[in-house]
Length: 607
Figure (cartoon, rainbow, N blue to C red):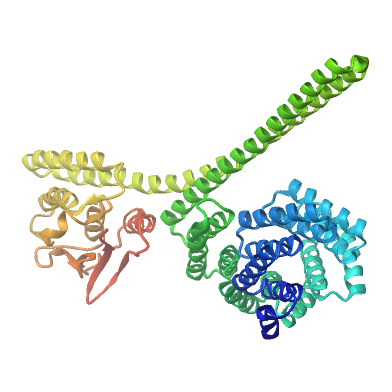
């Protein structure tokens, strides 16, 4: 590499020698250091323009396109490929034109634009066969095989074209081509669930790429090997390969590939039920995906990974958020694709109109100057109309295909909406359990009190109505201010003190500055106090004391002295478990309950 740099800078050498050195430098760097490759190619381009050598300009533009392609900057890659083709058409170098067409087909294939990919790879293959370039023929076979691989049930054709390419690469001893063929064979056998063959061919590709310092190819093979290892249950080996892949893509600056690697690592951790690690990986994938573009497949994969990780560990609120982001990104991506398709159709329509206008002008001139050719011109007009009719039918077919595609996506979105609604229904179900439960317990207290003291029963009814009005007002709320809940508890404790007289005491010590700034789930305090009354005995000598206070400014604590009833109360399963389930839907911070120093303590997070 140092020798090539020295040759390129030696102005006493012929221009073609210096240009060849820069060209070889660009190709040497393009896989593992695209920025350096682009620098060398731009030096080559400047020198070629200065010496007015269009062939060398075209070669430099092709290397610049490759450097952008390996950094996933596809629009810039295509722009430089097109400039290269324009120069090659002038010089007539059909052999090198074949290589550039193949590179353009590769970019369209990565973008899943398969019609365009087939168009350019077919052009490349035709030129390679015309010029007798066997290496480019093999490249064309690889390109066609990979396109067939993208469509289902074409494994036989894929293997046929890969074997053709492999035969040529072996005869030429072309190491980079062999690695490419081996890698694609590995992917086919992975699709066929033949993991041993998939791993065999992947390792053959990786050995070549590693020895040749082909960092991009080696990273791709590491990714594929990690996938195979995960299917085999060899998770530690899979993780090691993913980590090596990440290090390479960080070095060469391919952010889209890096996002794919992080998302795949997240899926690997989900398989092992290591959900926090999955969340950590997929968040990195999401950050990179959003930096690359707001709506793309990397963002979709990351949101799907995060949704699964949160849902599987029971954290429904963030799961719901990422499900909504997933749906929104898919909608945005679909809108972009539809806009692009409509733009292409408009260009086709305009091209057809321009073509028709040219034909009509030609027809008018011929009619004016050559009357004898009317019949021939009429025939041409008829053929033009037929051609336009075919174009209209093709456009109609395309529009119908877009309709069915959109309909399928709407069905998928409807399924996702149903899953989101199921999460919302879980929250609503937990909330509605509380309302009748409170009423039934209060009516039970009232039925006992009416027989003892009618005046107190009347006061009880008044406080009960105020309390239940609070429940009705807050039934649609997931959270209420701490002050609002405290005012309700004062009314509720009045009801308890009427019933139990001096056997029940409630002590509330809450800082005033937290009452309006912090929130809790409605009826949390009522359920915890009721739970204490239900499961503990009380008397004048041994009153039940319940304390409510704040710990560390972040946690609400409800504590009662522990004196269990001799006969355990029948439990409905609504109280404490209901609180735990409701807070699990609101926050990642858990509710803690248990015995502590001869007292029963419940700690709930302040939100």
